[in-house]
Each structure stands twice: as C-alpha cells, then as structure tokens.
Image: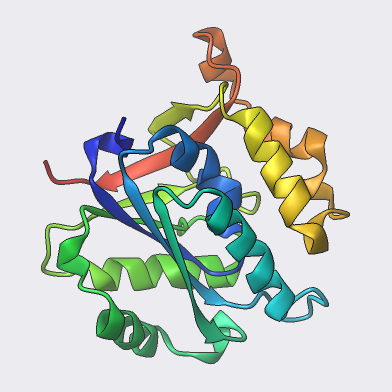
Length: 209
C-alpha cells in the first residue's frame, strides 16, 4: 500500500524522533511508499540529551525499517542557529524537491518554535512546484491544528511502541515516551467511534494527483 497513493515523500524533522514519533506507524504500514527522512539538528537547546547519541538512536530505527526508509542528518546542532532562508538553500543543494510527491512537515500550530520554523521552510521549498505538503502531529502540536486524515495503526502500534521505547534510550524516562503516553497520543475519540483504536493524525495541506 501507498501513503496517500504517493510514491516518494520527504519527511522533515526538526529534531531526532519527530518523524519517528509522529509517522513511524504509517511508514511501517505503507511499505510501497519511500520515506526520505531529513533531520535538521541533533536536538533542542537546554536539553542534556542533545548530541551524537540522538543520531545513533534514529539510525538504529532506520536500519530496522530499512525497506522503505532512507534517513540523513544535516549535522547542525540546533535548528535555530541557521536562518530559514539558509535552511532552504542547504536542503535544495542536496535534494531536488521536484523528485518528491509530497513533503511531510511539522505543523505551524505547535508549541515548539523550531517546529514552526520547519513548517515555514517546507512551504518555501515547494514554491513553484507541484510537490504537496502534509503536516503530521507530534506531542507538542497545539489543539488549533485540526487533522483531516487519519491512518489506522492498530496493527502497527505494538511494534511502534517497542521500537520507540527500545531505541530512543535517551528519551525513555520522559513523560511522553512512557508506553501509556505513546498509546494515548494515538487515540482519537472520533476515530474510535468508527472502530479505529489507534491512529496517526495528519493534515493534508495540499496534494497534487
């Protein structure tokens, strides 16, 4: 199966674990779509887990789900240390956006300012192209962000929880990485009424057929 019937998407992460926390179930489910994951930094400022070890945690996950994932780190310490226009130049130097059906981006309605920066960068990257934009929910996404596409991950949730907990060792003691919190993150009342117990939530901003 393909995610939104798309062949190849570029997933933008501000920090290690953004894409994995928000999208990993869909990556596991839609193995006919190729997901290129680009992580812009080693983590957040004032976070004592920020560093090379966060990269290694991500890479272990990419290696485990290697059939349709290609991950890469830009190598910057923090997203905020580089201006948005410079980020666009950096990404366009290594990636031809026209090769992608869609960019998976962090949403603009988010409590983390670097997530909002990534959203601005994504829109700049698709200017003048038919590359679509879909935003994905993370633990810091605000209620103002309203999803319009849900992926049922009932069959993938156990594997996703295991992968997140087993590989993101540096984050394991944080509240949002507790197993109950991860499972709660994937619940939606409206979806539960139609029998979807666990879901990943997205907002289709624009997609071209």
